[in-house]
Length: 68
Image 1 (cartoon, rainbow, N blue to C red):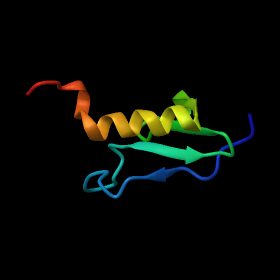
Image 2 (cartoon, helix red, strand yellow; image 1 turned 90 degrees about the vertical axis):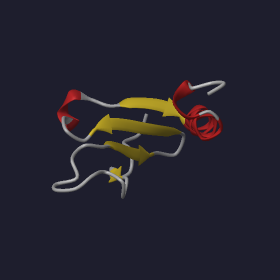
Image 3 (cartoon, rainbow, N blue to C red; image 1 turned 180 degrees about the vertical axis):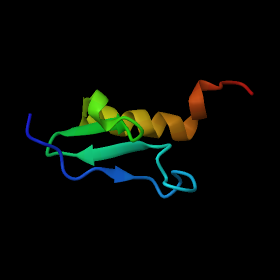
Image 4 (cartoon, one colour; image 1 turned 135 degrees about the horizontal axis):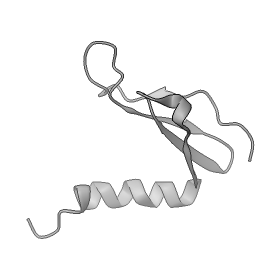
């Protein structure tokens, strides 16, 4: 896998230093995520299509809360 593009944080990452967030980096075929509080701990990488479907599912049923 090639190295991801620069890491990006959400504009919703909180006040102060804005370190309570997940960072995302995109590559040609993969999306990588890491914890901004501990970036040296590593990152998870997913095929782009899988990550897009995951985000779409969150928008339909946020956080897995069904029937509420």
